View 1 (cartoon, rainbow, N blue to C red):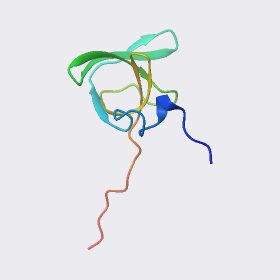
View 2 (cartoon, rainbow, N blue to C red; view 1 turned 90 degrees about the horizontal axis):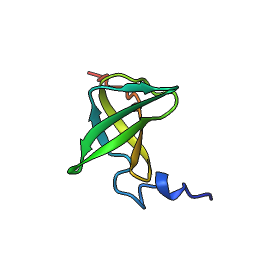
View 3 (cartoon, rainbow, N blue to C red; view 1 turned 180 degrees about the horizontal axis):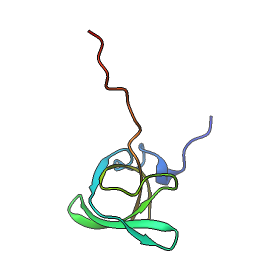
View 4 (cartoon, rainbow, N blue to C red; view 1 turned 135 degrees about the vertical axis):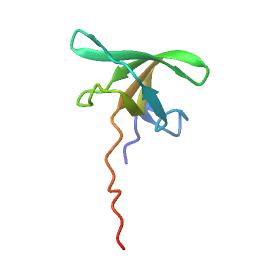
Length: 82
């Protein structure tokens, strides 16, 4: 069994798997970045490849130094059965 790298492991960092709100993305080269308040400080945020750069809630997937790497929240089925 292979363990996840520490920067992506929720057992190492309590931030992995948490949600953050991002209102505005900026394009820098081929990447999208933002700066948001999180846990009492301003953080630089990078959008993970394949995620959509739109306003909304994002899932923290990784921490690289002082940067949060985020992705879209996985879609869930919210339908109900009577």
